[in-house]
Image 1: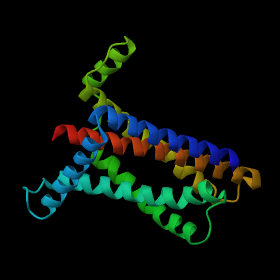
Image 2 (image 1 turned 180 degrees about the vertical axis):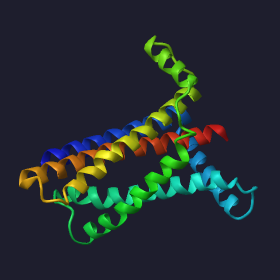
Image 3 (image 1 turned 90 degrees about the vertical axis):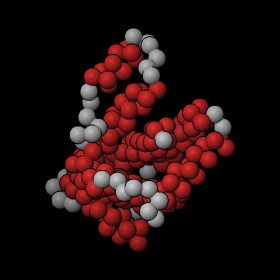
Image 4 (image 1 turned 180 degrees about the horizontal axis):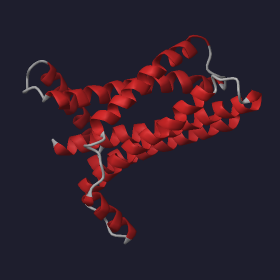
Length: 214
């Protein structure tokens, strides 16, 4: 528990520092980053109140699924990591009930996310060019590099969701013994941590990419 607590705290702090540094690099100042966020929120409110033309149904579903998956992830992260990081204790009580209730909803949202986003975020020749540039120590263009990172993040999230779900499902069956159950719980925690890091980075890159497209 102590080792996981330290690793999780350092990983989350490192991710927050990377996001802050990346925002500052892209926006050049915190004021510009805040103005960009305010503009995006205002545009979303205007769209909901009929200020802009409605998006096609498929695009609207993609956005809705993305938002729901992100919301479920945040709730799972808060209910799962808060007791560990703040108190050094396992998840229990109402937080455990909340965690277990939201988990299947998150699993369904991930399935829908894969269904609606997999084709759009498939790898293509432009991504191969980005890889070649990186291999030859060249600097890829900003937009293709961000697209490539978004695709890598998306598929990483889907891959990490497999051990995340499998470990907790297997732990429900009394076939691994006490040590096996403890190992499955630890693997579930580390899988959740890696998925959370990948998902937060993905959300950040999505926000930056959409902002640059405006």
